[in-house]
Length: 178
Image (tube, rainbow, N blue to C red; front, side, top):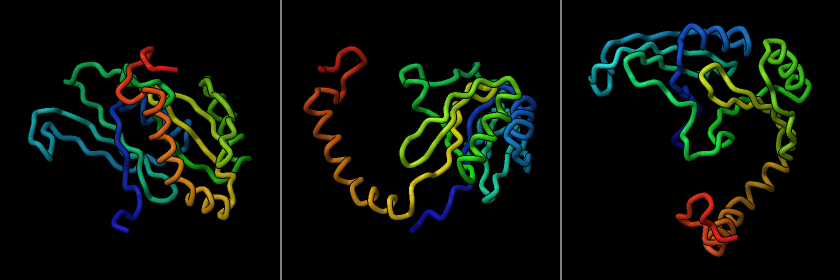
C-alpha cells in the first residue's frame, strides 16, 4: 500500500494561542512543533502564517494555521451540514471515552453523546475555532470489521442506485424527490 499512516491533518484556526491552550489543556496533546513564515513555501505567495502541530500517541499530528491577513474564517462550509465536516480521533476504549467526556465538560464545553454507531461509540464537541471534533472508541471485533469490509462495495453500489432512484443526484436541499 502506498500510504502508510497519517502524518498530519491541517485546519485553519482563529487564534494560535487559544488553539494551543485548547489542544494541550483540554485534550492533553503535546504541542510539539511550530513553523512561521511570511511566504507560503509551496506557492511563494505573500501570506504571513503560524503553523502549529500537536502530537498524538501514534506520532501523527493535528496541525493548524493562523493566517491573520486572510479574510475572517467561517466555522464551516455553509452548504454542508455542521455534523458532516469533523475530525474523529480514537481513544483506547469506552471507559476512556467516558472519562474524556467528563474532562472536556469540566472546561465548560458542551459535549454531545456518547452515540453508539455499532462499530464505535463517540462524543462530539467544537474547538475554539468552530471545528467539530469526535472522540471515538472502537467497539467492533476484528471479525466484525472484516465482515463489514466485505459488504462495503455492495453498500456503495446500493447507495448509488438509491440516490438516482430518489432523484438526489445533483439535487439541492428542498428539491430532492421523496
